Length: 362
Image (cartoon, rainbow, N blue to C red; front, side, top):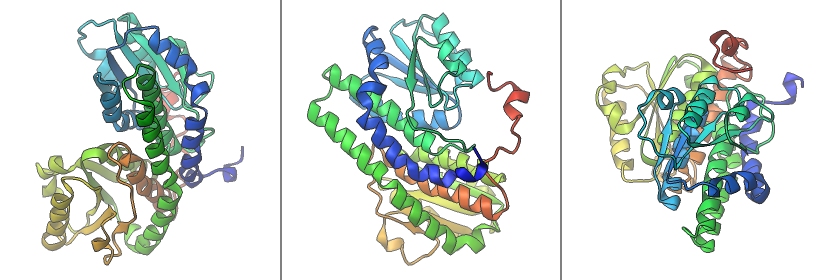
């Protein structure tokens, strides 16, 4: 496969069709995992993974808890491995690794099996080591994604975890067929927006390109249902531009981080609809007036359109799936800004890093 045959931006746009395929092929994709789930009596779920996999777990947590009515805990693999457990054999641990080689996730699955828990390994790659460390496989069926920073992988992992949970909820009669179909429609409607969001994000980036290429510190702020988009967006830009990019929940930011904002700081606010939107706008206005730094808002509020720093789009703002929309501008920013900085973010800065660190199992 030649480098020019694929690009991170293409994978962003492909997310729409990837989700549609997951939904249309759900009976085949989830058959084994659903049968395995119902062979147990599960009353607690852990989702363990690192980076994008962890963020996808966070994006899925709320809706899974809501429809299944059981606790869902999302943890970094080593936190799971090192914690003191209250033994409960009716626990399911889902280890998520896009490449199927994450050593820490494998270690977490081994710990889960040692404790007698049910285990599922979820990966977008076939025949990888992770599947040897779980009782049941689950395919994240998104097709190839060769770029280092995973974009389609994030969207596809969220869709996989959610559709898996929805199928369980329907089968166990925790939701009705009407509710099941409604959730699937909302998921598809949200991800169908992705190519248009990406296109709008390119326009926004080009309008602000001359300012953005001067940035050397970016701070991203979000809240509520978009905390996972905040974390994943931060990771994508950080992976790509390879300088200081940090992300904070809105209230957490106010408890100390604000001291560090100066005129050379670029701040991007995720303005999803919700109870904290006006609070976020108030903070953006404060930094405009008091610190004169560069401030950008991603939102659907048309009142903000007169400022070209802002990316205004008709986001659906579905409370269960908003993170799948608001992450896209950061995915696009990561690709476009890194390219203009002379970085090919498709290729890792050190292709042998995981081998040197032992963070991948081969």
